[in-house]
Length: 149
Image 1 (cartoon, rainbow, N blue to C red):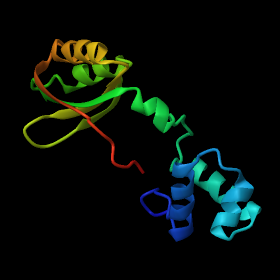
Image 2 (tube, rainbow, N blue to C red):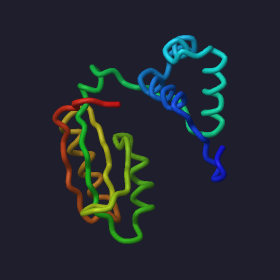
Image 3 (cartoon, one colour):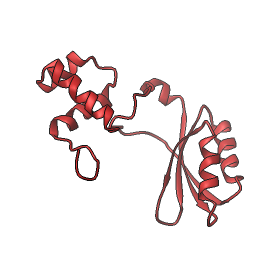
Image 4 (tube, one colour):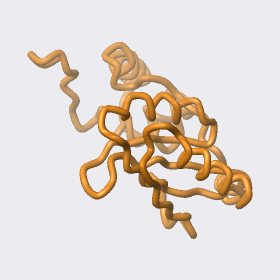
């Protein structure tokens, strides 16, 4: 740990995290072989990364085939002053909102959203725009994902 309480990570930790992003269910033995380390060393590093909060959990990653069936969009939101917390809480309750980021620029927030079809996407975007505290929205539908890391 550093003096600020943050975990000091080295290149091996970074490589381990990269491998886990590719496949969070990779067996420790496979990770060890790929990194040229012993299983014990990899297990120890994983435990350290988990204890320190660098690894907060493991999640399901949908297949490319499943992702391809969903409509994805970015919804830029202009939020009324002092309403960011209320808007954030309301968006967090919406199942189709996958990520919300606060930004600087012409909008205040960008929501990454997904829906199974165009009709449901239209409904979701309308629900977002109707939230108390949202002044306006501007949406961009994703046509294709070129790559994901």
